Image 1 (tube, rainbow, N blue to C red):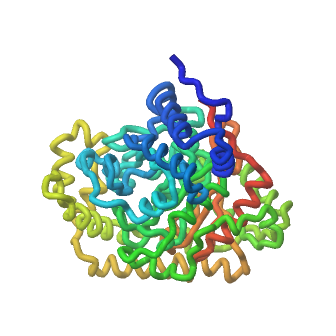
Image 2: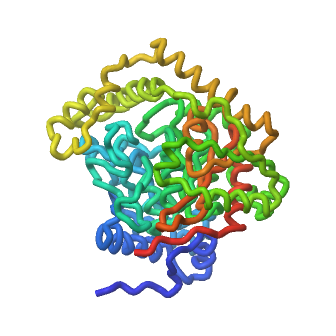
Image 3: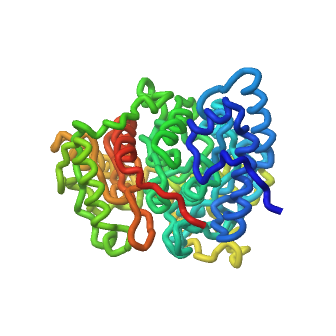
Length: 488
């Protein structure tokens, strides 16, 4: 029989709408969690089988009930009290859920502590309802692997139309779960495009913050230089709320020390519907040919977005130059750091675990190749052959070049030359230069192609400019309100 939920539930609700309803006793956190679990059962694991969820928190309903009781006797802790959140499967939780980064080798791995960001959102009163599927090892496994695929979880689908539509990755499930209304919020991670790409492909808001704004401690690593967690939501406001809950100085992540005095606990203070008025925005139009031919670019939608900026009072400078953006970025930094960081992570796993090094992981995958190696593991094998030190001249030179060309001859160069507040890129083509720089970006929906495929734009700027980017993205969102939910 079909389960009947209160008429209050519609396809999509915002955090503020939920909080008002909870304060007025119209709904409870328990009912909200049950509603999302029901949608997962109907659409994620049945029907179209979107497959964004890898694991469900068996205690989610109990946690929601406890938070409902706390609200009645003490009041709400804040805007996230009782709000469901989904985590990418590389984020550690010390509960009954596993943390595997999509690998079969780690499918029974239970962390001995919560990641720093998990502690933060638990303290804020959020309900962690599950772990999301992801591109295995954050796309560190195989050059042939499809975005959104993991050997543990299978293939995550894009909810907008054709099942073969590119879903984006590696935080695929985190974006899709929000887009499909299986949760209100989720947390992904990015090394390069892993938040921005799935946000664009699935018509949600994704924030890739400055590296160091949010602690990486308790996350299965890819690199030291570029990794960062970040929020997904259906609105800029909800993304800003989650961003504020995730930030904090963490003694276990030295990168957060540079955030001292720059962190905001409430990023909603920057939200201004007139935020584009008077802003100076550079437009990057020099999209690579391969991107234009990929089907991800829509010139008319991008021009429409630029027109909105102008109509909202922004000074727009077209065809800005970013000298280094099309340089051949080497993969040395990421591969050397993947070798070092993942080997270190695996070495610290409990003795009963099957793998304790990259070599162990490769051999384990070979032993169950029918299950684990659908797309092979050429990236892992290439990485494993590298030295497990970070003193090689190739690595050191590449690391210095990455910073110089992404910052001094990249984002900061353009901002200074044209006196800009931010740069707008079509889709997520600015992801690499921003990732190399460790600088923030916000991806936001900007319409749909004739095929129904989502299109979006990315606002980017210099270190710790999240407030500026949120102001601009919010004003664009309020002027357009282009996002539409997928139709199952």
